[in-house]
Every structure is written in C-alpha cells, then in structure tokens.
Length: 258
Ligand SMILES: NC(=O)c1ccc[n+]([C@@H]2O[C@H](COP(=O)([O-])OP(=O)(O)OC[C@H]3O[C@@H](n4cnc5c(N)ncnc54)[C@H](OP(=O)(O)O)[C@@H]3O)[C@@H](O)[C@H]2O)c1
Image (cartoon, rainbow, N blue to C red):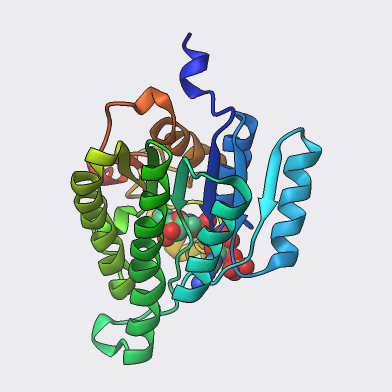
C-alpha cells in the first residue's frame, strides 16, 4: 500500500533542466517509479545520453530540447507531448539560470531581463500550457523548483533570489486557480546542492566554509537527496497537498549554528 502511493506507472512527466544536476536526479527517480519521463534542456546530445541511461536501467524516457526562455519553443514542446502521448500528468519546472554574481546595485539590464525571462516567464508559460493539458486528462501535479534564496536572498545573488521568491508566489497563485481542474501545484526549496550551477560556491573553499557554518547538517546536499521531495509532491502520496513549499536544506532556514 505505502509503496503504491509513490507508483507513477502510466504517468507522463516533463522535467526541465534534466540533463544534469537536480533535474537529472529527479528524472531518474520518477522513471524508476514507473513514469515515462520527457527530459528537456537546451542541448539535445546531453539529453540523449541521460535518456539512454534511463532506458538502459529499464525506464522510459524521451529527450526533447527546448530553451526555457523561448516562448515558441515551450509551446512546441507541449504540443509535441500532446501529439505523442495525448496527456501530461506531471510537470517539474526545474531549469533556471543565475548569470550574475555581484552587488545587486550593479546588476545590468541584460542580466535582469535574462534571469526574469528564464526563471519566471519560462516557469509561468510552461505552467499555463501544462495545466491546460492536465485539465484535459482529468488533473495532474506541477512541482516548481524554487530555492532557499526565495526566502532569504543569497549574497550577491539578488536578481536570482528575487526570481525564486516570485516562483514561490507563482506556486500559490497557480495552486488556487488550477485546483478546480484537479491540478496540484507545489514548490520545493533546495538548499546548497552539489551541482555545476552551485560550483562557484561549493568549489571556493572560503565561501564553502562560511556557507557550512549556516547549515546545521554541516554539508552540501547531493542531487539525489532533493529528488524524493519532488517524487512525494508529484505522486498520489500528496493527493491533498497543493499550494505548499517543501524545504530541503539541511536546516539552513532554521538558522545558523551560532
Ligand atoms: N544547486 C543548488 O545549490 C541549488 C539550490 C537551490 C535551488 N536550485 C535550483 O535547482 C534547479 C536546478 O539547478 P542545478 O543546481 O541542478 O543546476 P545544473 O546542474 O546547472 O543544471 C541546470 C539544468 O538546466 C538546464 N538549463 C539551463 N538553462 C536553461 C535554459 N535557458 N533552458 C532550458 N534548460 C536550461 C541545463 O542544461 P543546458 O545547459 O544544456 O540547457 C541543465 O540541464 C534550478 O532551478 C536552481 O535554481 C539549485
């Protein structure tokens, strides 16, 4: 009974930013639980390698490249899923960008535009397209990957942190208005996780040492430790959960060790 709650057999799941890092770990876990995963990011060759690994392990995976900042590409992605599968049960909005690291007052307009375009507009547009397709199929689950920085802005990561706060509010707004369609919408807030995205922080000894002082579990997460939170929210185990945020941060938001 308990294991059936997490069974995703017969479900179709789209995971963006699934060629590496947290998105890849999510795709591998959802596929292991029986979902047919549609993995997306910008580079088709990277996606093909991940899809081959999932299929080699006995899972079902289809790789479709799309730029999260390109509205037309997102429309084509959802249209292709509808044409090939006729349904979408799960969307994990995970692909994000953090191109600027520096004092917030020095953020130039191009960096603001790019970060808003990918991290907010991309999540919003995919949520709109996906929720309508889910409605046709009787319902579904959207999981937005936000960040602890959406609650507590990261130093020198101002514009990125602002977009992650927007994702948290977007989660609540979509949850309210999509509930009548039986579409649940939730967010996961990862803490510092060992991926290429965070390597500027994790590979710098001084920054890492200072970061660990604020993490009660005193270590960085592995992507496979974030993925189970997404599985929970995507699955029937969370059938009465919508409009919530689930923090997976080693205790960071509980406060530092001092
Ligand atoms: N790592 C952390 O410490 C941490 C902490 C909190 C939250 N997060 C969040 O977790 C999510 C995943 O981050 P990660 O650490 O796993 O990063 P990652 O390892 O760098 O992976 C990022 C993924 O997104 C794809 N991507 C990047 N820009 C894209 C775009 N414009 N369009 C489509 N795909 C794009 C990348 O593939 P291509 O480059 O080939 O497109 C890749 O598959 C993000 O939402 C991030 O904000 C991360």
